[in-house]
Length: 430
Image (cartoon, rainbow, N blue to C red; front, side, top):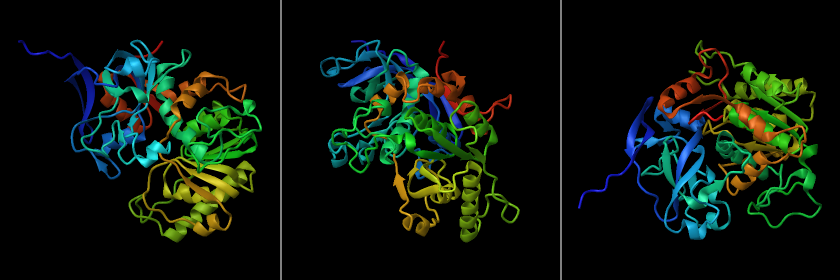
């Protein structure tokens, strides 16, 4: 009997810092409960960039060659045994968004509906678990059917890929009580006075009318801009942002992500002993600087009492400190950014004013709602979330040019000096 010859496909494989190789790999058929998906769009994010530049993301270093990418969408090209019977909405030709985390479905967190906290979670493109689970920077991949989500007809592959970071913000918004926590999102214009069924997020608060809230976003990279975009979609009318990059703030204002008077460009801290970032500033001086920056921002925004909800999207120590001082008494801070592992905090300024610091990790039960938001009219009739999300994709590259895409992302500007927000890898969509 002659041996079975498997088809091959291209994949962008990381071997070490900046050592990304596009190579040919065997393509196996999908296992039981899996679908094979042709990946048509993958968005690059900060964690992908960390792996590319350093071969690690925080404590998680790659131990074997790893395919990066986890913000993705594509088309099902084949289905494994058991899929047709258990997932009738998934068939060959179905357009799907790929939820990158594969949970165990058996632990307490999974049973409670908080599977983002599953200790046995395997996440595409993450080196946290070994053997690693390859990501989406490949032509085709096999993925469990239960974490594939059909895409509405009016949502593009690029938009559907960004349902992943949008899910991060939707989860954070639920945790911070900005939007409904029911398994099926209801936009504010349609909410009744009757609270939804018991949520799978028991620690969050049901909020029937978020439009009265004032929101501040610290950091307007792609994830921060999505925070602004989601807030607009939920009907929030007062949205401001702080960043160190004036170009990003200009984009946010021009595109309506923030209010016309809602952008504050933060000056970089002075060099310490002549070397910026090489030595840490004295903690007390840094705390005082952050407080002064917060007061300057509030003065600029004419919001002396602060903001009801602050999305901290940088992970930088100074911004976390600043978040506490920019939150209103009784306000909430959603900790979205991942950065400095240990920080000095003005804890009394939070505790004595009942400012809640809310941790938020990835997402759970958000994809259907994220895709619905991208597909349907928002509570703000002048705001098209899907169209605005498309504006975040500033650059496209083919899979063969994945390494160049990462280099451009690392620089933050393209060859023409244009601002890089989100890079999508895959065939250019018409």
